[in-house]
Amino acid sequence: MHRSRAAPLGALTTLAVLLAGCGGGDGGGTTSPPPGGFPAAAAVTAAATNSFSPRTVDIVAGGNVTWMFNAIHNVRFGATAGAPQDIPDTGDGQVARQFVAAGRFPYNCTLHPGMSGTVVVH
Picture 1: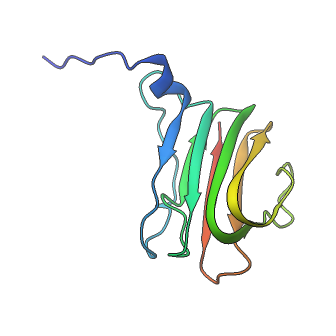
Picture 2 (picture 1 turned 45 degrees about the horizontal axis):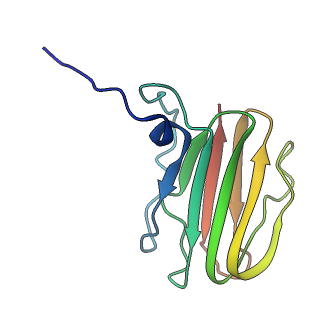
Picture 3 (picture 1 turned 120 degrees about the vertical axis):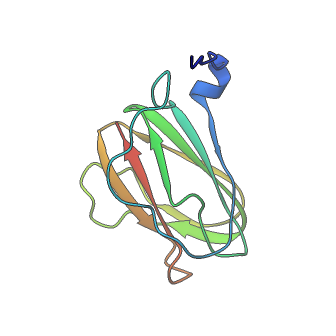
């Protein structure tokens, strides 16, 4: 018999995304909702290793993603319809963006080739 435990509300509303080394993809395909649904917020760390990890974060429509910078990076969404405003070159701090529409929003750091990620809004 499989039993699942309910996660605390804070675990359902905040997803911490840890920084990892370069490489790997976002896996593609669709993501099944975790128990309790997708979180309303996510945090992404961008650091001197020039990567975002994981490359894909999932949130609900109306949710926020906060990028935390400890080295100079930026976040550019390009011409993706419905994407929030780009984040300019930022060194030491945090910048949040709200995602109001469902969809896939790829982004990259134009200062570091290959540094990219995707926000998937459900």
